[in-house]
Every structure is written in C-alpha cells, then in structure tokens.
Length: 237
Image (cartoon, helix red, strand yellow):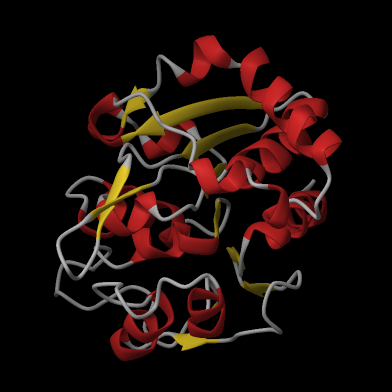
C-alpha cells in the first residue's frame, strides 16, 4: 500500500515585522483536497507536525473570498476536517518520523510554515531523505515550500539549488495585504537561496514538477499538486 506523510505547521501565529502576532495555521483547502485525493484511493495517510503539536486551521482559509465565495464549499471542507478530528488531534512528531516508512511526503501551506517549518531542526533530514530517493515523491503547496529552507546536504549546500519549484508569490502576498509587514517573502527567500522559482498568474492553479519534486503555488493549486503526485505514482506502477 502506498503511504503518505502529510506535514502540517504546528504554529498558530506568524510574527510580523512589527512584532505583532498574526493568527494563522494550516490552510484548510491545502490539507483537505490532497488528503481526500490520497484517502479515496486507499492510501495510508499519516499526519505529522513539529513536536507533535495539534495543528490549527488558518482562520483566513475559511473566508468566502478564498473559497470562490461558495459557502457550501467551506462547509464541505469543514465537515471533512471534522471527520478526521481524531487524527488531526494526535499527529506524529517530526522527530519521531522515519522517512523510510513513506512513499510520499506532502507539506501543507498556510502562513504557519513561515513561523516554524522554515526553521524546524527535524524537517531538513526528512526532506533530504525524500529528495535523494527517486522512488519517493516530495510535494509542497503554497507556503509549505518554506519548509525547504532548512534542507542541506552534509557539506552545507542547499538541496534545492537549481531545482524548479513554486510557492506563494510576492504578487499574491501583496494582494493578500501581508507583504508590507511580512518579515520576509517566500518567493524572495527561495530565489536568493538559489532555487529556479517559477510563478504563474496570481491566484490561479499552477504547479511545477522537477523529477520527484512537486510544488503548487497557492491554495487553488492544492488539487493540481495532489493530482500530479498521483500521476507520478502511476508512471511507477
């Protein structure tokens, strides 16, 4: 059976440049759509967070403007989360995860990863293990790509230097009104670190696949990223 590890932020705040704590967490759609895609085909899906902290849903991810102004869609996603409440309230701790146990590692976004996964001491090793094994798939959506920043090889080189990828763009952060007070911007940091960052039009589905690495730009790319993971798995079966 194919096994998937979905990594979520354990932070419920993002500390802004002026020191104020912005309430955040994981983005609902970025968890629900991939989780449902993998679960519906019978994959074994596990959930992990830093230190096994219970993850918090980013309140903005429930807002109508980020869900095509469709209350039924919000209600459907909330109901799906509720159906997996027990799993979400008892996640694995990243430092206890064995990457050999998983075929796919999928990292969920929301602004929370900018606070914890971007500097997490355990996630770099998991990412390195996934990237180095071409039989595994590493995927991330939106700010989940912030988790790539701590991943280096034994010589200190960043593992994503020259790799094609995407994540929440500067344009999208500006449109979301956070860029002026953000301590740093994901697109800037990925580019500066050496990634071959690729942005699609703001708030439109966009994914990038580079070998065994799949990334989605923002919440509307979550389903497309999950579908691309499924396509990669099919080519290996």
